[in-house]
Image (cartoon, rainbow, N blue to C red):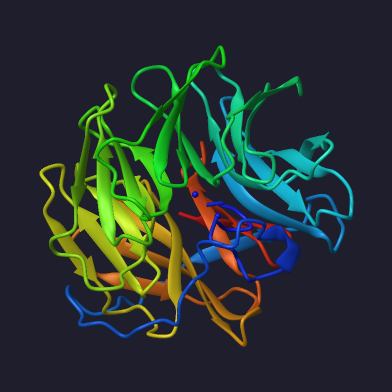
Length: 354
């Protein structure tokens, strides 16, 4: 949402090319087994389709994706900094690539997130160049410099017709004309803000990965931080609104969290493989949240890639019919009502058929 090589979501996704992690922050810790809450795992079966029609090079790694304004899926396909231009790819709901727009500048872009803006364009966070990139569906590209050299890990469309993004220990706001405002008052120092999303209460909600907090910021810039109910070293990562009027988030320590708009936090781990970490999550059409997860070992090796599902009462299902080293990261609901995700380590796009 990965400092991913995103979603890019900016977890320095040790998954593929180490040069993708330019900021050196956000690396996942060794996972911890936590006390579980909620009911046991379900035995449901997910039908998953995998598509390979992204730019073909072993140096590409998709980091994030968005449901576009044109009912297509748009993918931020990053590339190793010495191998060429990164790509912004349009994929139809049949899994076919229909457009590819390449982007490169004097530095090397590192796309960490992509979202559809209120103006019908796609907006991307480029942590490699500290820039916000705007791309129309016709491929016109405009770049806005943030003026900061922190870490742009996520971007979302706000309730005020502007875009909001995370920038290290501050929150940024950019209008569709490119005017940027930054907010840091009320945010604890050194917390490393990882992801941000619009909440059902007209505010923006964000994760503080290093601070083990969930934050809330109003469109006027007033910040509130919540930590009560979070386990120690939870490392909250991605966050998204749920169908129940609450916010749901992933924890790098191997849990899914839920926070009400009043600040009450619950955590769920039963049903998640103890050695694996949930990454990104999004609401599905089935009154549940869907999330990506995988396990890492030996620093850069990936195994046991899965797609997970959690119901509003905390019942978790894991679906393991993915290639072991795929490393699924970003996930969204498409215009077709299915859940789409990127396999960052495999340079592929996946679809959970619901």
